[in-house]
Length: 67
Length: 196
Image (cartoon, rainbow over all chains, first blue to last red; front, side, top):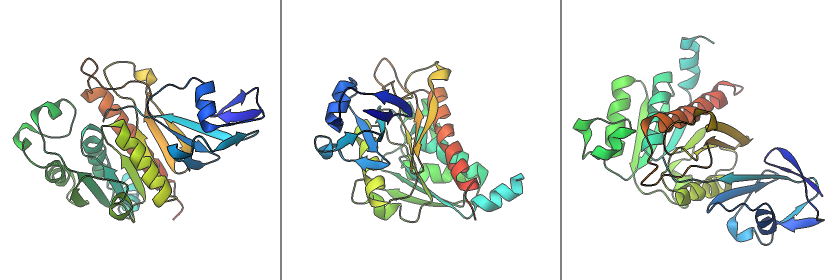
């Protein structure tokens, strides 16, 4: 499937996958991040149950301490 | 738009600032200079000497509540701004109440856990209100790594999204100030481009 990931086209060799699987697949290892799928904020409790499908727009934001 | 028109437009708006440390104090003063009408500031801390390497406070203000000190500094720059302060620890429950009616909210916390919390709270309980998050500003140099990114109409990220503050990589005035100014600049972009 093809998705938009952080404003770039991304080809993934799967029909669909969960948010958790996507984060593992992309090796996003930062401790804290925020995810939006098609403009909807996804609570971390829902990473295992939220399915990403072909054409979806996924935004992953890294949260670093400091301010 | 000339300066006068900009002031007039901005005077109608209310901006919330969550945290009055390096990001919050610098961002608030920048917005006050431009003439934002009402600024809602929340923090529970007091000014300490080590803060002065990056935060918009003065030696004479050490020991003061940050909310009181920042209000004083804003009034010294622009007494026309209405400053509302809350000496409180923000959480998921009180954020929607305290920032209700704000046209834009600036995230200016220190800890990443708090950044995550306010994104959750605003996106869930204040739908449609733009939130501008600072993420990644530790250390010095690397100007070109600092950027701002629009996720959508309700979420913006400023910073390098990689550097985390630590003993060896402290937050310092230049990079903190750049990110705080980026946040203030997005506030202006949102408010001045808005159809009246």
